[in-house]
Every structure is written in structure tokens, then in C-alpha cells.
Length: 305
Image (tube, rainbow, N blue to C red; front, side, top):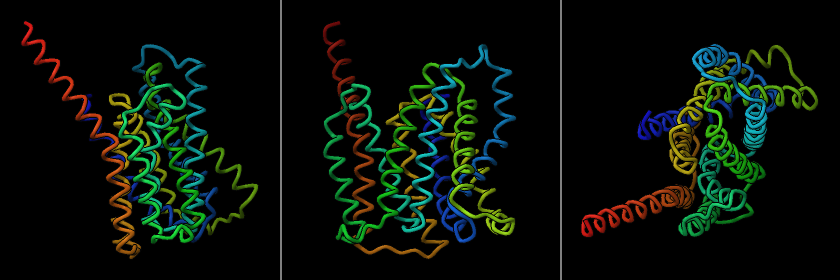
């Protein structure tokens, strides 16, 4: 798979995630957030198991215990992101949630420099400042307008950034994306069902009322989209993956407007644009700089040759 094809796969995953925001929001009319997480990822685990078996049959080596531990850690990051996002949707809008979740595109390079010792491009820091200003405008120009759900969604973005970073590192050592997907889905299913059993009530009627949302997010937003993310990340970098995945914000905002009739203020749209622009420049500026450097090196080589 070429990098262009991988990025297209990631774009498809982002589009599916955008649709999932609506289902995640409406599901909580009937069911608690943790029961919803547990059931959707249980469905996702069942859906992906045949593909894991197919991958295992074609693989040259088995998954090593060290890789399993890495997959479990990725599952914990995914559960943290899913939990904070789902609980956050109780007190924020689909539009806000989709845009604030996309802040992981700024967090990914920050994690790289802080924990991996990889020095980011200078554009990362002004991009981060822009993103924070965009959040301020999205709140209506008053920080007091930010809800608990908005803050939880920002935490969710940090968890997504950790998950994206860890996937890139794990697949360098164990190219088994579908096995990774199955493990992280299982962790989320167990975590969601366990917390839901302890903190939330459940009934057959509640599950039946939310069944369409559970199946949609389980089969598509979880099973399909997260598997596409992991497959696509085998052939591209974590920061490059983040910029394509961040387009879920646009799909989420569009579908939130079309299906749920949500609106944001004019200044909120400006904030959304600034956040998305920060997402773009944090990847495009370093890429353009790299291309100019390569071009200059090629010209120097031609001149000296």
C-alpha cells in the first residue's frame, strides 16, 4: 500500500467516525455511556475476529508477548479516549465534540518531543497557541461557556494522541494491525462493561432502544474505522495520520447540523476554522520545508556532478 492509499484509508475512517458522533449522542437517550462503550466494542470485537484469524493464517510469525503488552496499553489509551468522549457528549454538542477531539493533531507532535525525544518543527508551538484560541472562540468568546463535556473532550483528544503515537510505535515491531485492533477492542469492551455494571443501571428495553446506535458504532465506527486506522498507519507516520484523521471534525459538524439541527455562533465558526487551520499547518508547513530541502539538495548534487 502506498502512502497516498494509506492516507485515503485514514480519510475514510475519519468520515465514518464523523457519522459516529451522532449515533454516540443519540444513544445516551436510552443507555448510559459506559454500557454503550462496552456493548459497541463487544460488537466490534466479534466483527473483527474472522479477519484476525485470516491475518494470522497469512502471517510468518506469531504475535510475541511483548507486542501483546503493547496492544493492551493501546487498548487502555483507546478506552480512556472513548470514555471521556462519551461522557463528555452528555454536556456538549456533537459539533463541539467533533472539533475538540481533533486537537489530537496538535498533541501528537507534543508527545513526540516530550516522551520520545523527537524535536518537532517550530510550527508546532504557534499551531498549539492557535488551537487554544480557537477553543476560546468556539466557547462563544467566554471561557465560562465551556462545559465540563468540552473539557472532557480535550482530555479525550490527549488520549487519542497517545493511542495514535503508540500504534505507530507498535506496528514498527509487530506488523499485525488486525490483531492489535482485536486486543484494543477487547480492552474497551471489558472496561466499559465493568464500569457500567458498577455505576449505571441497564435493562433489556434500554439496550433495545439503543440497538441501532450500538450496532452502527460497533460495526462501523469501531470495527471498521479503527481497523482502517491501524491498517493505514502501517504505511504512514503518526503525525501524517493525525492530520487525515482530524477531518472527522468536519464530518461530525456537518452531520450534527444536518441530522440533529445543531447550530453554533458566527464566532464559533471562526474558532472552528482556526482549530482546523492549526491542524493543517502543523503538518503542511514541515512537509513543504522538507520538500524544499530535498529540492535544494538535488540541485546541489546536479551542480557538483
